Length: 205
Length: 331
Image 1 (cartoon, chains in turn orange, brown):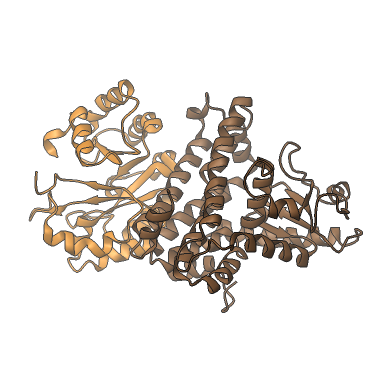
Image 2 (cartoon, rainbow over the protein chains, first blue to last red):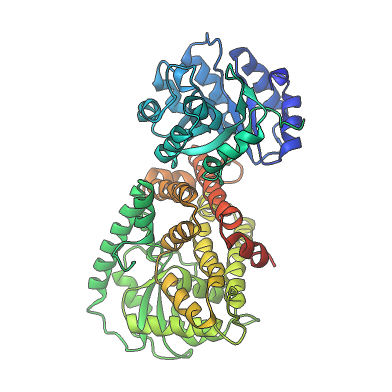
C-alpha cells in the first residue's frame, strides 16, 4: 500500500474494490495530515459505513498537543483513529479522542505495546480507548498464536477493528498468504463483528 | 434465572472474564425500585382481574435515574370491565409519570390486546402495548392476572400455523412489524416537530434495538424445537429480560467475544443514560445540530457496535442460526 500514500482518491478506490463496508485512510507521517484534512473537507460523503484514520507513527516531530488537535479536527469524519502505543509520550492529550482512539498491538521489532501487559498499562491511562488487533503483529511475537488469543482474551470488550496481512522476514506487511489465512483463522473467528482492514493487497492482485 | 442461580448475562460475564457494571447496577436499581413501588401500591383497593404493569426500562431491568413509570392497568376481560385500581389512583403512587401522549397510564383490556391482532382495530397504540407487554414488561401487582393474559397472548400466536422446527411466523411477523413501526413512527414524530429528536434517535439505535433483538432471537431460535416444547421454550425466554435472552443467544451460538462487545456497548449506553447531563445533552439534539453533539456522536458509535454484534450473531455465527435468519428474517 506504500505506493498509495498521500493519494486519497487512490486509497478510496482501492478500498472500494474490496468492500463498501470499511476503509482505513493512512496518514502515517505528519506531513500527510493537511492533505487528508483537505480531502475529507471536499469529500464529506465517502461511500463506507466505517471510516478509520491511521495516525502518524513514523518520524514523528509534531508536539503531541498539536498532533491531537489536528486529529480532533478530523473527528467528525472518522469512526476511529488508530495510533501506535509505543509512540505515545504523554497520554493526556490523547484522552481528547475518547472512544475514537484505538491502540494497535505492536510487532516484535518494537519496544512496547506488544503484549497484554504492555497494552494494559496504556489502556489504564486511556480507559475510553478501543483496541485495534493486528493479527500479523501478534504472530511476529508468537507464531503459535497464543499471544494473539491472549490479546483477544484481555481486550475483547475493547476490540473495534482488525488489521490483516502476512509479514515479510523484515516484518513488512505482505499480502495474506494461504498458510497464514489458515493459521489466523481461529483468532479471526473471534472478530466477526468488527471491520477487517487489509494492510496489503490480496495475493491475487 | 438459570437453574444454577445465575442469569445468562452473568454467565456470559463469567465465561469471558468480563463485567457489565452498568447493566448489573441497573438491575439492582430496578429491583429496588420495583420493591418500593409494590409497597406503595399495596394499600390500594385492587380488583381480582387487574394487574398494574410497568413497561420499558422496567421490563428490560435497566432503570436509570431518568426512567419514567410507564405503566398500564391491565384488566383481564372485555372493554368496559370494572377497573380497580383506577388509573388516577395508581398515578398518585407512581411518581415518575409517563408522557401524556404515549400509550401509557391508561386502563388496557386484555380482550382487545389479545384478540385484536392485525386488521383495522389493531391500531398503533394496541400493537405498541401488546409488544411491550410481551417483550419488556413486569407486573407490580396482580401477578396471576399478568401471567394469565401472557398465556392467552402466547396461545394466540401458537395457533394452527405453528410448524415443528420452524420459527413461529405469526409471532415473528409481529415482532418485525413492531420494530419497523417504531422506525416509521420516528419519522412521523419528526414530521410533527423536532422535539426530542436526538433522544429518540439514540434510543432507536440502542434500547429499541435491544427490544427488537430480544424478540427476534427467541423467535428464530424456535427452529431447534418440536411444536410442544417450542412454547415452553418461548415462555422461559420471555420471562427473562431482553439482555438475558440476547446473552444466551450469543453463548448458544458460540459467539462469546461478539456477545461481550455487543453487551459492553449497550452497558456503556445504559451507564451514560444514568447521567442526567448526557440525557439532557441528547434531549437538546435535533437533526440540524446533531453533528456538533459529542453525546449524540457517542450514542451513534455505541449503536453501530451494538448492531454489528447482533448482525454477526444473526449472519455469521458458526451455527445453524445464520441459515435460519437468512430464510426467515427478511421474507
